[in-house]
Length: 215
Image (cartoon, rainbow, N blue to C red; front, side, top):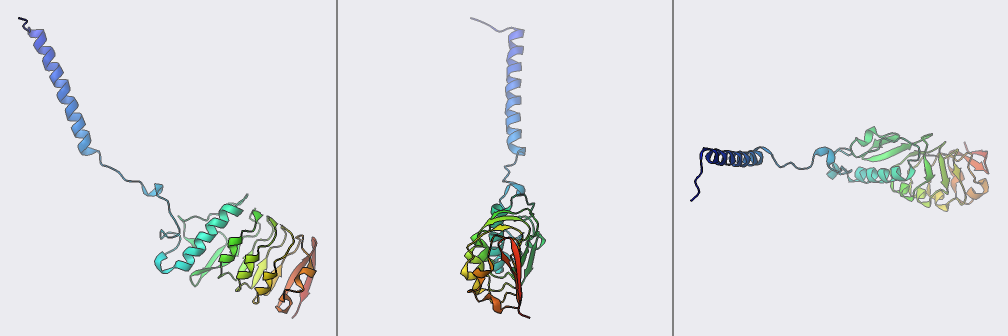
């Protein structure tokens, strides 16, 4: 029969002590380590989150405009540095003015925008001013701009816009100023649109300016 001496007893005590310490550490860690949810910074903010648009439940029109603009940003950014973000109040966004629960001005002259003008721009039905002059926009003017019946000023000068011009421009009955200077467009394409009854505007012949005034 094998008996343990003083050394064996000491070894057993040390093993029991290590085991007890390990159990204590595990139990202690389970008590003091809380379960954490995702941080605020990790959450995905949207136009309905309440930061970009205050009281989003009663501001559905502005929420829709906010979403449209964020979509435009991803298409047009190019070399531009637009601060448009759902984490910033829309009233602080570059080139944006808000009135009556809608975006009323979109002024983005000389911002390094590139690409074509997205069709979705026609969703900003509250616009009275739209300026994207002196950028690198190409392609044709989208027909959806004809939906912006509240427009009074439309300035797309000094870009690379080309024919055809959409006949829907004739829907802009409130238009007071139209500037398409230095684009690949032609004055004669406007003659059937009914636009020449407006207050006055500047039209473009191929990379050259032609002006017409009715006042």
